[in-house]
Length: 77
Image (cartoon, one colour):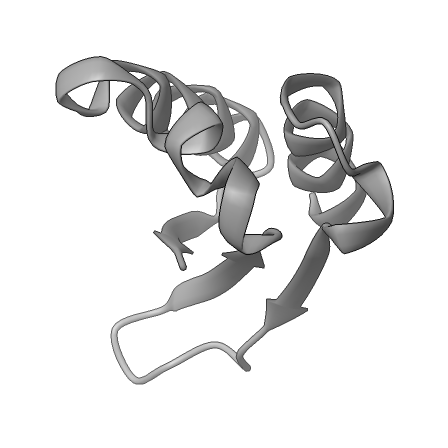
């Protein structure tokens, strides 16, 4: 799942070396939180106009997690 998120982000940004993903352990609700960090200049590319790209990233991640019977949340910063 971490590689999927990193791959999506690297395809969107100008500086792929600035992409990093950290993962929190599963919380008490059974949700794994993924933190996507990109370079300062690329944050707009990952969020998109009115947050459409960020929403799409979250949908893809939730769909992939659902296939594995997992729950995920993506934080972008």
